[in-house]
Length: 313
Ligand code: NCD
Image (cartoon, rainbow, N blue to C red; front, side, top):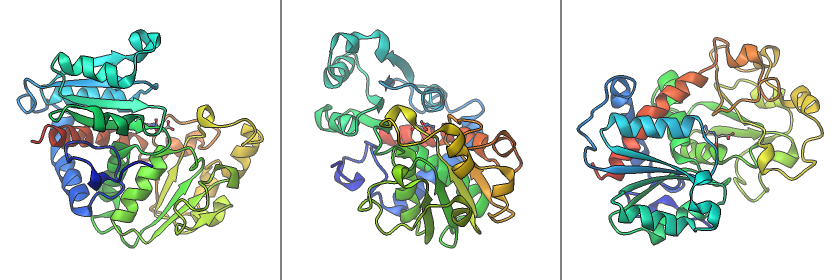
């Protein structure tokens, strides 16, 4: 079991589970304030002299690029560690990899790993001055995605999120994004958060036991303010959980017609990468209700705020 966030030293960010709402709000406010700099010239003096290592043991496009840009725009030295071309391929452990990079003066490690627990373990083994920031850990957490999703929702729906209806749809079982979103939405007191998907792709009943579950898309979308679609994560799945992509699309794919069950001002979110034509249709992904690219832009600002906190600034 992973520790909750309040059991960890505050420079680390591993999960949003257990983080006080005030701390989440402070990170979002800071990210909001950093937005112009995140997409413009940055604040190149903020982390000058600090080394940030991106340590990715799983593929990534958005998360890695935005952490890299965030670090550059704060003036840090950035090292992109390619696990696939490193001694990790010769069996060197993640902990030894980190220790060697610490010995070269790296201070912040942004880590993605397929195994739940692998990133958390680094917080126990790091030196006291090192900060560990999760960029996605197994199925368990993706805290900066949770933050950027909340920031995006707040930009559209205002600061008081308590009255919203949020539907999280699809492969919730394998999704670290869904878990971090659920942690954040609960921390913000959102009363109507629901998860929906085929039973084989929902979490075990004792996980998020008090979150309502829907086994039909139309009912789950009814009156929703926010529709969060998830990728079908075939790389984390045992065979046979989904009969066929066509059948999945028929039952769970978000089409323009099906979106009409949600509120007229509903926003549509997706963390990417999208399986177009499977969980979401092109005209929804690229349509007027989609905030998918705004999520991506917010990612840079959120990661700047998180890196500043990791540097205790
Ligand atoms: C997600 C991830 O890797 O957890 N992508 C992302 O970081 N935006 C979601 C996914 O892979 O489906």
